[in-house]
Amino acid sequence: MASTAFDLGLRGVAVGLFLVICIVLLRGAPLRLAARLALAMCVAGAAYAISTAPFFPMGSFGWNSPFVVLSMGFPVVFWLWAHAIFDEDFALRPWHGVLWALVAGLGLMAYNGWSAWPDLAATCSRLLALASIGFALLAAAQIPRGWRAGPLTGRTSLRIALVVGITIHLTLTAASGLAAIPLKSMSLTYSLALGVSALLAAWLILFYGPQNRPAVAGVGSGAAGRAAGPVSHAGVSASDQASLHRLDHVMTIERAYRREGLTIGALAVRLGIPEHRLRGLINDGLGHRNFNAFLNSYRIEEAKAALADPSQIDVPVLTIALDAGFQSLAPFNRAFKADTGLTPTEFRRRAAAQRVAHAHIDNSISDF
Image 1 (tube, rainbow, N blue to C red):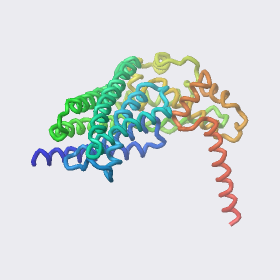
Image 2 (cartoon, rainbow, N blue to C red):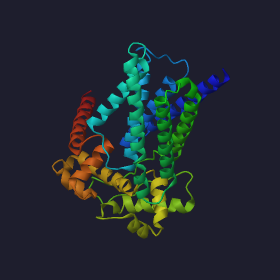
Image 3 (tube, rainbow, N blue to C red):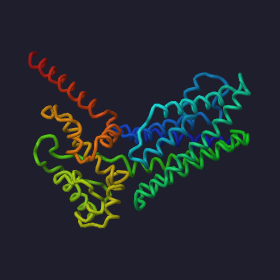
Image 4 (tube, rainbow, N blue to C red):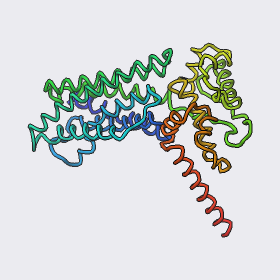
């Protein structure tokens, strides 16, 4: 009884941490792809903590089915999240949703179908275990991208640790299922692993993400730019704070992100600081996963301002992309869609519709 109470307590803590992470992520809206997938992972993790807990009803399709579906689709979401955090060009495709639905369906049948169709449920259980191992290994295969991105920072190291930990947990859980080890005998181990994963995820989100997006001063107005507000980062040393101020000036006022072929080494020389220190400021201080994501955040903000500017309504999207620092249209479209969830044309059309709606409201108020 004591072990069961401890098990349930650990699961409650894990669910609470996952919900806190969800709240923090939602407060950072609009969410980028990696953050949206992290949100989905937290929801799936909370559902897993609930659906595998002692006394959770299984064997029949009822109110418990949504929890099972969300939790059993976790391996696919985990794989997609690992892709997104290490590959800046990654984008979701419709077939990713199909994969998620297939794995979640296998899980639903494996957990809730054994009383009505025991043979089918057993087959689905084995297929689910194999799929979980496969997606876990595919997620771990993304780790070398993090190593190739440059020297490891605290943020990147924590991401890698989280990916490795979840991969081990998924693999061992699936292996125990293939070995027909009863779920009850592994419940406490599962809850401990969940607690550790939730703590790592909370540490990653609360201390290393998501940061405020950079403000690009003066874009879309035809001016050379105006000074942005002071950069403030709690817990940053005085020397790093000064470097961040200088970096903010170089990016927002001088618009260094527009320079063709800009490298982190060249930017470090311009700031007068070592490259490894600048990389740490960008990754840990500002919360960007790599240098290209850092540059693209400024470029996308400038492009968004230009696309929303009625005086530039006839300027081609390609021209806006090139002016912002992109070398061609395809990378711009991918980065823009990953950042906003919209294509540049859709974003421009929505901005125009909002202007019309605001004008209509203003006219109504003045008539009143």
